[in-house]
Length: 398
Image (tube, rainbow, N blue to C red; front, side):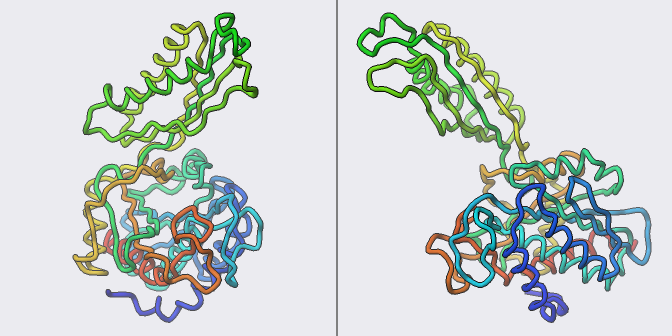
């Protein structure tokens, strides 16, 4: 492993920053303190900043010694999750119901570390934009920054993201060309019928039976309409109907999620869902309505940028520590919006199995979105080294 020496010297400082952010989590679009911390450090390191994109976003502008007009973006997310932390170590969350359970505190610290180095060692050609983004956790902060003019105000040829990945060994990286994370979509199905006494069902139109039939039929979309090689998940996660044992209600509801790696498959699923809901309800004397919400698109890495990132990783940790063909996950990531606008690559950095956690950690696994999670501080110099090497290699003087 070839870590840049200053990151080892700065390890205690950047660790303290990461743990301070962890102790003061802020939810989507509320990252005022975190944004101030980021902005203050960048300013102290003589890095010009821009604030306000996406509400609380911060952009650091690091210019090389020469400038041929090339530029890249490096992105970290800043927001926390609305969940209770189960850890009791010193840097545990100070706020009930808020927790950095996805490692965005670590992502922010790694990129700050890299920005500091690049500002002091700017022997590259072009500009590095360090992008500190709000509201990744369901708030589509990346989309909001784009709508606020991110790529118009700061034009760049490529954009890159990184996320810690529990279960992957420390010192390893993972990525793949093409889809690496799925689209995230939600649906709400309402079936309106006619209520009746449970002992006299013939006097009503039973929405529960229609809902049950819809639930069964929806699975045929995945098994009979979708091409077998096109990955997709359709999960019903909630069913609500009735309040008494002897009353057939007038309404039933189904709620769930759909995940795909392509918009074509998503279009197919939504279209077929609409038909099944409408026609099945009608066949059973009821009326069905479908509300389908597309949240995040699939995260799709550009082939050229993925190959470039893999080569940079190999130079840092060696070829055996880089998996450039990881199995994509059905989790979602709003960095996908940036990749729809600009070529780039989203990668994973191994966070280990959880044995790094301080005494007082929760008894649950060190997994993302878990109350016992904590970011692994061993990654701070490694992630920062990767960012620096990536920027220097991409903007190598011509």
